[in-house]
Each structure stands twice: as structure tokens, then as C-alpha cells.
Length: 163
Image (cartoon, rainbow, N blue to C red; front, side, top):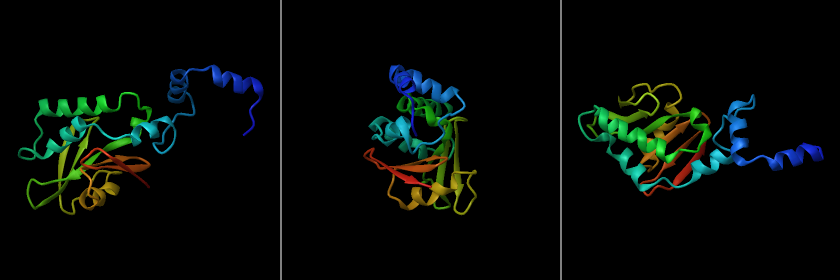
């Protein structure tokens, strides 16, 4: 695409924060997680505190203590403070170890809901694509987005799995 000299100079004078704000408020809102600055941030390794917090979701009797839920949600928000594409973040899937009748559990960070699912039980819309990754991919957990999944290994490394 060809841009005039004036337009190119105008683009150079905007700060990254102005550009990010324009991207989220303008008609050309960034919705994907595979390209741009948001994708770069989402490719970074996850912190040990984040991985540890999500690893504790299976503790207990299939119910999430509201205080603990608040801590986990705070850790997720702390992990992603600058990412503009979290609107496309559907939730987190992980293998469930409560008993043999369950296979995965999900965490919907926006509604602060932890749900455990029995083998073969239908998952909420959009999350089903991450089930086999959570069960057989060797990941500690899988972050599910509208356009991809991100498998997070126990050491925090991230694998991007496009749809």
C-alpha cells in the first residue's frame, strides 16, 4: 500500500501508546492475537507465579474458593497488563486430576468461573478446540483465543497453535 509523505510522517510522530489507543477505539480495532504488538507480548514466556497459580486450580473438591479465584484472576491481569487483544481471550483449559470421571477444567477469567468437565461433556463455545491440546499436548494449560490456542509448558514457554 502506498502512503503519501505527509501520512508517513504523521505515522512516525505518533507515540506507540497513541497508536495502541487508536487501534482499540477506532473502527479498525485489533481483534487478532497472531499479529502485531499483542502477538509479540503473548509469545513471551509466562512467569513462574502465573504458571504456579493456574496449576493450583485442581486443588480441592471441584469448587473454587472465591478468595483464591480473585488471586488467580489478579495474576492473569498482572501477567497481561498491556495486551489490547484480551477481548479475544476465551479462557484457560487444563487437564483435570480430581478423579477419573473428569478430563478438563476451564477458567473463564472474565466471569471468574472455574468449571470441571466430565469426559465427553460439551465445552462452552470456542473452548472445545483446546481440549485435546490440554489433554495430550504436554502443556501445563492452554490459553484459548478466538483465532488460536497458546499451549503453556510447565516451565512457562509458549507454543502458538493457529486455528
